[in-house]
Length: 283
Image (cartoon, rainbow, N blue to C red; front, side, top):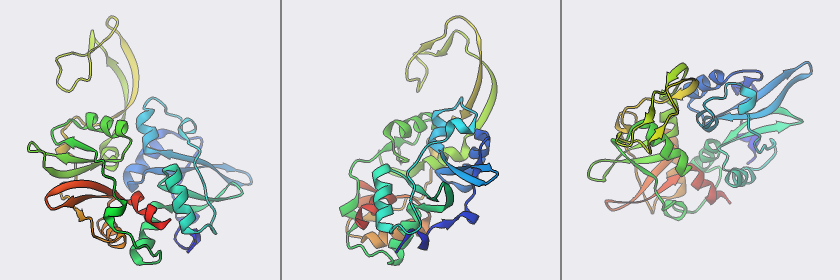
């Protein structure tokens, strides 16, 4: 099976154009719940593919407004590439969405979800179990953590999710990057720093940062609500056992429209199976 058999063709791919602004991308990512959006440049000879803008870029570069400065170069593939080869490409670069490009023209997009669909339907045959491809290291966050702090935890851990734990350290939900970007908004204006940006005694302050004097600084930032993680997480936690097949795991991911499943053994949380982990079984 090749990329052309599963990809989304160009006429169905929503893109943004340069020149443009971050607001164009933020609205798209919030509406579609995608991790990135392709960027094209119109010319007299047709459009040219220029790269992607990801949700990570929006959060990590909050003061950058110009779309051209947020564009990232990414690996691309061609329509006649096999799904096995594109799965290897995704794993090598940590890329969830790979543009399908020929002669600098965007022909479509192939995603990790497209490969997972092929596994779920049996179009790609794999024999592994969920336990054989799981990641044993688990990222987690406390349910009472303010969302901006949790977003930093996701960023520092370089993973798109955190399993949410309650006061008894029991898993009660899942927080993902999509949950964060869904409630983020761009704000503009001037903020007074005062004499202290954060006090050493402030709850959840990483450290006290003293401002020099009392001044105003222009700001343009991504604002994330300060409510606790429990208000924004997905509470219905779906889990899977180690003996479930990779195909059954893929079917669960597609059925519930999620990207990861906690792995349990009895009542114990022992790992996490992300959709990208399933690509390992395609090799």
